[in-house]
Image 1 (cartoon, rainbow, N blue to C red):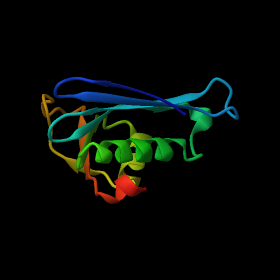
Image 2: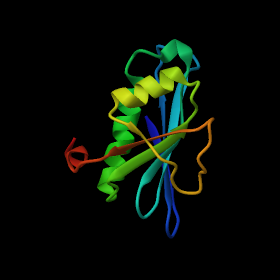
Image 3: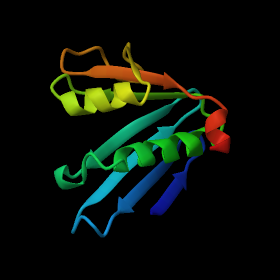
Amino acid sequence: MATASTKGARRSLRALVMRWPRYRLSATTMAIVLNESYGEVKRMFVRPEARGNGVASKLIQALESAACDRGCRKFLLETGPYQQQALAFYAKQGHARCGAFGSYPEHPLSVFMGKSLSSAHASA
């Protein structure tokens, strides 16, 4: 797994890329943006041939741990109502639907979800 991070005065970005040799040319990427009050999952994609093997769960757990280490106690995300696999995945990871956040407006093509992080992630 490779990691990269960039920090600004108020926000920081953490990106993880995981490549598994078993899945030729497949990569999983995800990034979070941390600000004063929450971390936001910005991008997450697992190639179809790599799905169902725990790749996404490992990535999101690593990002939650990294965010928790930096004092983040809430994870939020925006996805679409037609992304049924994503909605099921996030719900399985403990996310629940919530209202719009940040600069996002309420919109019928947006589903907002959130999860409280505990300090247990920092020691995981």
